[in-house]
Length: 109
Image 1: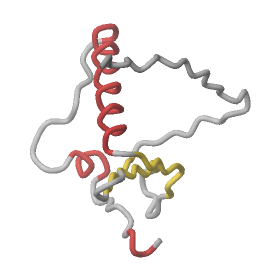
Image 2: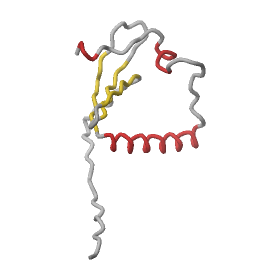
Image 3: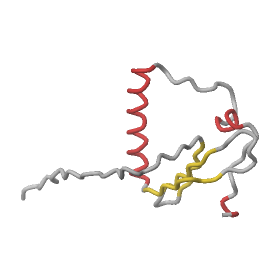
Image 4: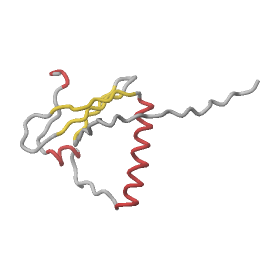
């Protein structure tokens, strides 16, 4: 019995010319046993409210592959432009960046 190797399939990805970029400086990540949900928002100084501008729902395996791809790209970025400095100290990173901002309650959506 021979084991068939899966053929590599090329996929052409089309990016629409009129696609607008969405800026995000805040992400909330939640999960279920079968999905990872990432909500991207913008938190602005002195703004008591924020809005989610994009929601990505994916599988745990794809999220782990995305994590690996992001890590590889950040390593390449730092090799070219220098290390990205993160704030030091205790507490949660979001609290250091946004002070008293708390994420919205999902039950209010």
